[in-house]
Amino acid sequence: MREGSLEAPVRHPIPWRDEAFWDAVKLDEELRRVFDICHGCRRCFNLCDSFPRLFDLIDDSETGELDSVASAGFKPVVDACTLCDMCFMTKCPYVPPHDFNLDFPHLMLRARALAHRKGEVGRVEGALAQTDRNGRMAGRVAGLANWASARGNSLTRPLIGALAGIHPDAELPRFANRTLVGRAAEAPEVDRLAPAFGRKAVIYATCFANYNNPEIGAAARAVLARNGVETAVVHPSCCGMPQLEQGDIAAVAESAAVVAGELGRWIDDGYDVIALVPSCALMLKFEWPLILAQDSAVAKLARSTFDISEYIVDIARKEGLADGLEALEGGVAIHLACHARAQNMGPKAVEMMRLVPDVDVAVIERCSGHGGAWGIRKDNFDVAIKVGRPAARQAIESGKRYIASECPLATLHIAQGMELLAGEQPAPEAVAHPIVLFARAYGLIE
Image (cartoon, rainbow, N blue to C red; front, side):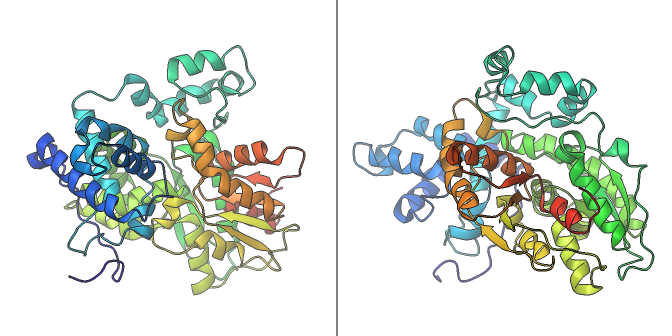
């Protein structure tokens, strides 16, 4: 046996169609095996709240070891995992190919999947995970929905909190009147003289960019057109990340089949695939091939998918970028989103921003604390703010004019953390995604 972290981590397919995967006794045995290894290592204590909960659970037990901990106490540990994958990708010395074969996030997923099968996931949680449906409904009455969900609305936020279990102080995403797909016909003119002319890319809108912040997609299309790339926009279905967080693996597989079928036709016509949000790119590139390991359409999609920042950097390296980038006064602090890091592609958002002339870039490599829908829940919001406080503090102390993350939810959460920390001090302007700043550097948007 070799010591861990000396080889690249390897992830195994998720055997969710095998009966052994759903065996509660076998699951408990695996939880105990892994938790005992984690207890003896503790390298992940500062990543998320799962590990402090686990270590406190063991330390406060009768023997101070796992043997005196009842399995009923494991649920808070499972619930605190946000599936960010940072323990697997950056900390754990015992991931495969190590003989210990430890994959903490996917073990937490297995525990949630069994809970989902048993009907232990509440209706509210399930409803919040229906991001496509929620986006379509709220978008029809965007003004009313945004008014009702605003933090300062003392009339409706208590009701939302009571019905949906959302913390009254949690900042919620706003909804757009027109979706990104609805604006798809308004394609910017492609620069035929740009070095990358001839490339074609279909943009997978993602739920957030489609329903909440189409500016991300508009900025991406403008930058790509300036660089000679023809684009189209589609959104066949949600990527299933919200369902994955709930343990509904079958629903994720359904979404994967729908989206892979639609995008496969574009790939066959010579288009690259771009996902605008890193969580969705992670699903297409890595999670779907582990859930549907034998599906050729999913495998083809995984090979053809790029994160938007990754794609811009790829153009810069292979063809060179079109002229016209101008300096962004005041500098930029870039937060490295966990699901961008989990793609194991390097800090592409930082690389992209450093292509802007004379730009002053600071890097924030700490968790935002949001964790999808996890951080807005009543029971989690205070912990989410605490976990994200170092990132918010670094953003303020960077002295930069702008703060951005490839994860727009992380940007939202860090902005709220900055608001709580800054007081009367000036804080950076929060921008939904680095591609928006890149479009500003080109003078394509205000």
